[in-house]
Length: 233
View: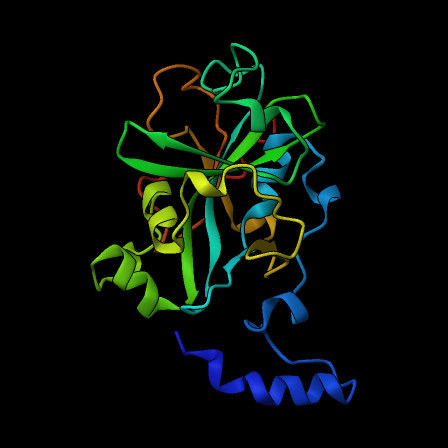
């Protein structure tokens, strides 16, 4: 994928003249691509999970910006036995019951961090796991954090995604709508005809629910195959 950073000055000049920018603009994200509003997340987790595909995850940092387009997400509802919130509010899941649009970050199997975004109404306890993304910018920094060179594996999986973005427990509770260091922007939404759905990965209960959503045929999806046009329940 071509590095768009050489276009920044031209884009800024067009914007200053009131001329619409052509094509996706990667930086400066907070100016040219504001964060998705809270209303985006104030919907059922299954609906938000589908709609997050194609959205851009962005982190600005003194060491450099990183950005990637989401290609795989999983929904977890409060009435879902596979959800951390299923047994009610705890110290660990407190953020899940907070305002929508905040990050819920947890350590999986004591090994890697996983990044979720809270959805639905405040107090509901639903969230969407960000599973995989296609790198757009800052690949060199991602490679340094991940210790590998294969671009397809930089963000392919929830633990890899967190590592590539430098996300850990310190980001738990962060407001993605605040246009801060970490945010989700509009990106390029994916039409229903390009979305596939299937069982979620790495769970032992509620395995029949088709609440894992991917961009069909995208090489940056973490693993497995899913069927087009399912998962609307």
